[in-house]
Length: 338
Image (tube, rainbow, N blue to C red):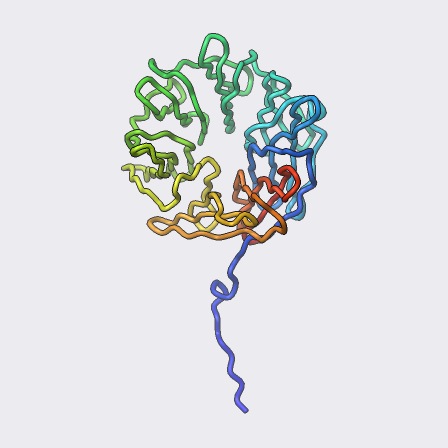
């Protein structure tokens, strides 16, 4: 008798798949704002839940093994909501709308602290932070406001003429900040060079908007948005390699790209609308090739909606909501690899 064995390379032997991670329930319906990870052993997810007297902030921490709810931050028991979360050095920074008053929560090894904004805005649109700087954009009764924090105090920055509204902002360093704005002639990409905001001269597709701008340490920039043709929207991606911009139209339909991240495999990942009510769906865009994968099946689910993705070491973490038949949306999390 001769025994035969198949020789399979380690890369081909294991095909990573999405798995469900338990999340302690909040008060439904729950809304997810953001997710950020520093590595495989630390991630934070933010949002807000519906209480009898209004919405209240929710914050969850991943320790590499399980999700737990954090209720130790300032204002955890008050009305409000948590927005974008980012890692700045060894700290996690989170934007907090505390009953209409804005502040930045900072989590360090010593615990929580808060940096109040210099003024109250009517609308807090977006927030970004890097070592040496943080920005909050929104509006008050006089119009657009760009608030800049340099580590010691706040200043108000001016934008180019014709900018009506800043829809989002993101930063690579304290002197390399990008924003996308509404102007009288359409959507425009702006860039801060440490001294002044300028038009970045990005030739967006005609009749298009911007959902997100993904900045990477290598210098690569990816813009994601929708272009409208005869009233029909399709997703586009623009990538800047450091020399030229390249525009592609991956087969994503009309997908909102705000949650797009660069995965540990070097491809772009983002959640898409699923054609299966009981499973989430994700797109992987690697150059000209787009593939799709599904999350785990969830019994009696009628809507599984990942809202945010983050690279966590060699894994991808997803955080969002799941609606089980007969109940309101509550929290869910999934992981690819790990």
